[in-house]
Image (cartoon, rainbow, N blue to C red; front, side, top):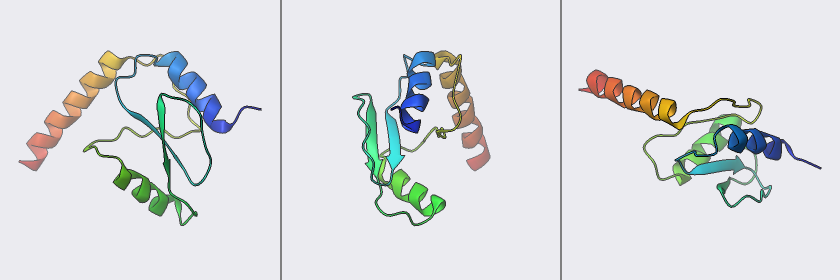
Length: 97
């Protein structure tokens, strides 16, 4: 039986096989077996927001691109994502300086 995560990652890797980023899966307790995916287990459910904060504090990165498991991606381009990310960083620098 496929799990919700396996459906999500089936489409994720199918449509973005050259994803250049570290990929994480946040979960309370469940395991997920895919060598390309790093698990972040937060334990007992507190609230969606608290669980998200707990997950994000374990990821050593200034930026996180968040996907929710009930949205499937298609026709994803690393080049377009990286261009959008650079545009975002440039706009943040102009806003914050």
